[in-house]
Length: 193
Image 1 (cartoon, rainbow, N blue to C red):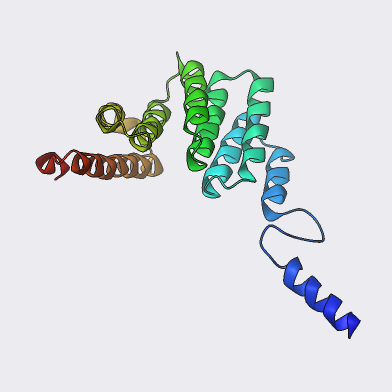
Image 2 (image 1 turned 90 degrees about the vertical axis):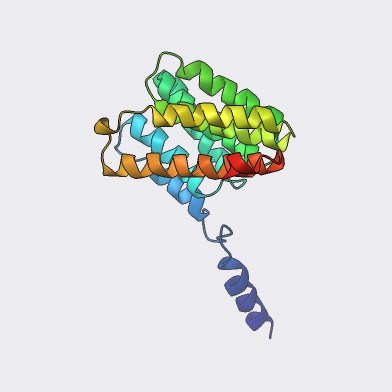
């Protein structure tokens, strides 16, 4: 009877996502796989921040982001640091830590100065718009999202591959949806359309 109970507990608790009794969680396995790979630091950082976003910034993803920051700092690449701080800002946003999110986004902006990544600039502004909306400053959220949309609409599409075009269109559509919802909060129904 006792053996059956132990076997039942191992089967039940050993198969829960993220609770592997016999080793690391799947997220930690992916983290180790990326960090120990032969790819460049640039690709490691981009893959780490993508992984954190893919996981919707759940609690274990902070470890991933901090590893991306560590690699970025050791590499000394401001663009990598901007991506890592942007990811950290999103992590805090998803965990309703708006002040921490703003600080991380400020650091992302600081590292992005002089860099040529308009998509990242617009993404940072978009997250800021979300923060301002959550804090109740709808007008500032609208203004910030309009700035982000303006940056995206100013990107030269001839330089983008097919995936880049899809990402650009997707980001603009997300901003349009966010703006419509924000305009509805101000009872500006014409602009919401």
